[in-house]
Length: 267
Image 1 (cartoon, rainbow, N blue to C red):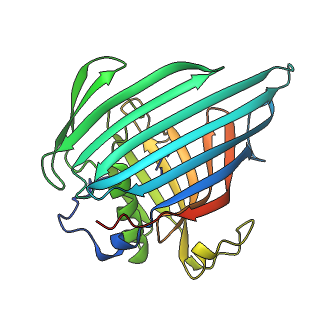
Image 2: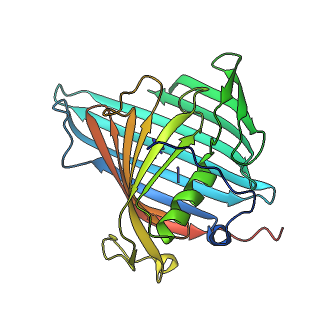
Image 3: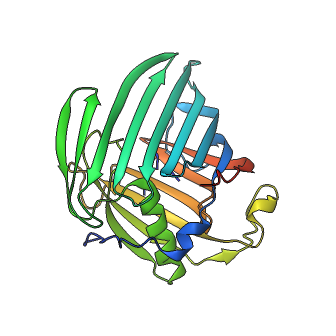
C-alpha cells in the first residue's frame, strides 16, 4: 500500500527487469479502514479523531491503478472540530518504469493543495525524470534506483520472504512534490494467520504477514529525524490490515474493516 505516508540505509536497490514470481500474487482489492487516534499520540490539543479511508488497487492490464480516499474529523481541547480530506489516484506500469499521480489535500471542503505529474525511469534500476503541472510546471531528475509505490511493495515482500529485515531504496510517489525520498523499511518476522485482526477476513486466511516500520527521508530530513513514519501489517498478497502514521504530533491508527477482492480483468 500506499505511505502517508508512504512512508515506507545506504545503497539504492537495482530493480530487476524480470518481475519476481511472487509479484503475481499481489491481489487487486478494495479495502476500507476505520481511523482513530493512537493511544501513544503526543498531541495535547487533539482529544479525539474519527474517520474512514478507502483504498483500491486495480489491475488495469498495462499497469496497476490505485485510488485512495481519506477523511477524518479531529476534536480539539478548545471545542473546535477540524476535518481533513486526502484523495490520491495513481497509475504505475507493470514493469515499474512509468508512473502518473494526482493528489489533493483539503480541509473544510476546500482543496488546499494539489500535486499532479508523471515520472519515467530510463531502465530498471536506472535514473529517471519527473514532470509536474501542479502546483506549478516543473521538472526534476530522479536518482538511480528510484522505485514507484507498487514496485517498492514488491521489493519489501521479496526481501521479507528471503528473511531480510532491513531494506532501503529511493522512493517516489508525488507526495513530496517532485523529490524522491529515501525509504527505509524495518521488517519483522512473518506470521501465518496473524491473530491481531479485529475480525476474520477469509481473503487473508492462510497468508503470511509482516510488521513493517517505514521511515521516509527527504533532502531536509536529518538521519535521526525522518519527514514521516509509518508502521503497518503487510500481507504477502499486498493487503495492509493495520497501520499507524504520525502527522506531526498527532498519530493516527487505522484498522481494516472491510476487504473485497476485485475481479480479474482477463488481460
